[in-house]
Image 1: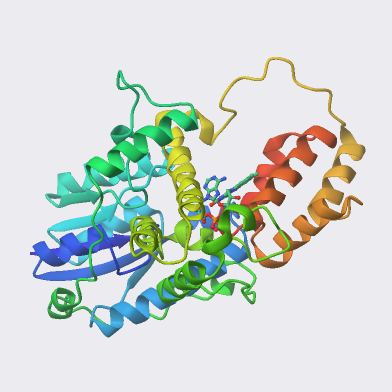
Image 2: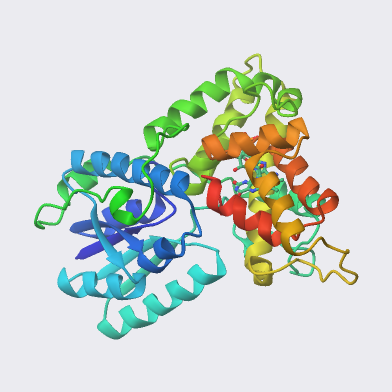
Length: 379
Ligand SMILES: Cc1cc2nc3c(=O)[nH]c(=O)nc-3n(C[C@H](O)[C@H](O)[C@H](O)COP(=O)(O)OP(=O)(O)OC[C@H]3O[C@@H](n4cnc5c(N)ncnc54)[C@H](O)[C@@H]3O)c2cc1C
């Protein structure tokens, strides 16, 4: 049996359910990545994000090549590209990890239907989150809208069915590379239509694991306080890695909780506060799955919209915010950090977002678009 592993938001080998299953079930595997042409052309995501993704893909390709199965890549409309690849390479099955963004759900459903018509099996897996929306529900099976209730149920689920972390399927993968022509070198940022930039964050799985070890040894020990201080390295800065799946959320949470059980010097409060942030991440993913309208609009309808500046005045105010020239030091520092590095501290994200909406009275959608175009972890 020959299977394609379609890499998407999971650019790693460790604890990678689709890759592990393909290695267990197939005689030959083909790793594949698809550059979505429409998404590239929309410039919804910016150069920092695209350069970081390319760095992650290079690292993934190096690791896969070491196992004898280099990453194949294609560029175009994803549904058509997967179908063409499946036909061309005469594959029996396509494996991927699920994506919960509404557009991605529709795309994946279509790929699945069209592959079924070709007689190609599809196997999909939970990966991007520890628990999917359907696994953490209220007493009557309803999706949860309040974080405190979600968090309590999330922990119950963790204690009753703690997720395992799967090792890299090295021995299996080594034997199973499909005999295909050599993969083309990955495209450059310029070839994709983006400015090449020097990244402030190191991409790829090995750097994600290195960053996790750094965080466990250092900032985690004072995280409950340190995370509130934008001037210090008090948080993990792992969000770009969670975004592109170069780090498994299961592995990260186990690593933090293990630090407690090993009886080291780290405090329960610091560890649980950090895990709480990862549960917030899961909470927002389940909100997206259960209430998909949030991908395009507000969670609740605003009844009385506040008066807004319009025309040139609005444009000028928005520009000062984007460029970090409002005259309010913490707002400007945050926006300059975003523009220069593709990342911003959580507390400062809250301040600049609130300043845009409540002080400048500019619509949140403009701010969201700007964040999407500049954050590496934008999602
Ligand atoms: C206006 C605004 C926009 C934001 N946009 C994004 C975004 O596009 N992508 C994104 O990943 N995060 C976003 N966040 C959440 C948060 O600011 C970042 O995840 C965090 O700053 C990343 O830094 P870190 O990796 O050092 O986090 P840590 O403090 O080390 O936390 C660990 C991980 O938990 C998750 N996390 C942390 N805080 C939150 C939170 N409040 N909500 C959800 N998950 C969280 C992240 O994956 C993070 O990497 C946004 C927050 C605000 C207020």
